[in-house]
Length: 245
Length: 318
Picture (tube, each protein chain N blue to C red):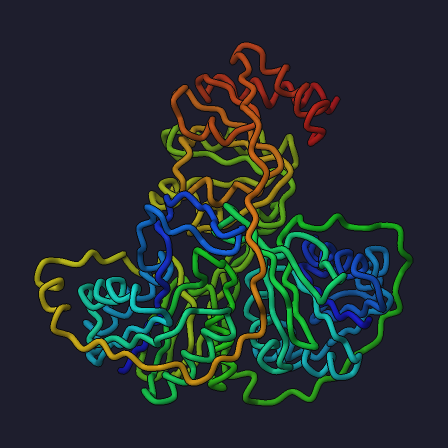
């Protein structure tokens, strides 16, 4: 089975978010970058499926040269080779289009990625890729089992889950508990250095949105502490000050 | 301007988040047509009119009973064609997100999801969307002639001053290729307030010490008419089901009031609740980081404070 796992290169979840240049650029000062947490689940499930059924895992990122350490980490976790599409990810359509073009070349049975990136939180790239490739797409997928050429899945819905089946090929947006996160071991880190990382140029430049400025939410006021023996004061504040009761 | 709104039906009624989408669309201004799929009475569908829809299209075909993403996207593309809609609005949800993405490709539209405010149309079409899991916003220009807006939960106030809308049957030529995914079954919590839709949420964390102690969380939630949630360790330990896990990798909520009991406030949990209007934190550790994000805080033993709070709210209700 040939699996393509698309990963994002995103600020660590604990990063302080700030902007520069008149709120038009993300401030990278002191920010650690990681594989998107949801993408990490997708990669971990791909590694498990490869262990069960054989095949190969290609990991892909749409990003400039700075994203290569993130791709190397994915290789250390268990991907066989990597593709970096050498472009700044302009918007969801641009990224989906690049992935779809690369996927056409690779003829993959399964295209996995996280349910959303944790920077732009759109949750739409997998389904755009599915539509561009005329393949079924599902998200957010919580379990995935492959039996022959059929995938059996559960998908989270509001207040529950649904069970689904579809024949491969498929595009899936993944989330926990689809797999246990994998941490690269020393052997993985050593072999990742020699695995192929292919850099390809984007096929076209089309985006369908234009980001103009960033904004920070208004600063939060100080917390009002209430004595544990005076719970009725909290109820009073919720009713008369916050007006939420 | 012609606007199409995709409305989701749950147990025969229009979901709250979809009514928000209808009211958001009405707020943009123009002719608002809503489209719904599956089993719902004419009366239930006509209620979209009160929230601001001028007309409701209903796809009653049996094939569209379950949430088949591809089929919904194709049907919506047909409805865009029929109505001449330039703007399509839907609620961000487990169905809305994937359907909007496929539709965007089909009709060549700009797409923005997680939108929190009405668009600025003074110079083009600009929307404000939540990014970095609620830690910031981006103002985004939708540059194509057609645009799709996925609105964040509780980003619009539901109007109730409209009148019942006319409901018309809408027929779609179903393509076999759109039904490759089979939904074999669904498991849904019934009779509960759904967490992603809830206006009030009570969540418990490890401080509750075990699943056997959840009764007091449920009592408080029931008294408030709130949904229940939990922190990641709680769902990881199977004390509570995954669909109650609130946080970065779980459900992100945006209620009017979020009450966190026995949750210390890891940054990943805060990322799931930072769009709440008001946050109450109850924790016995005065150093719990969650207090920094809270509006109101009580340092105390949850086992003493929560039952007292429930009683105080009951007294208020009476």
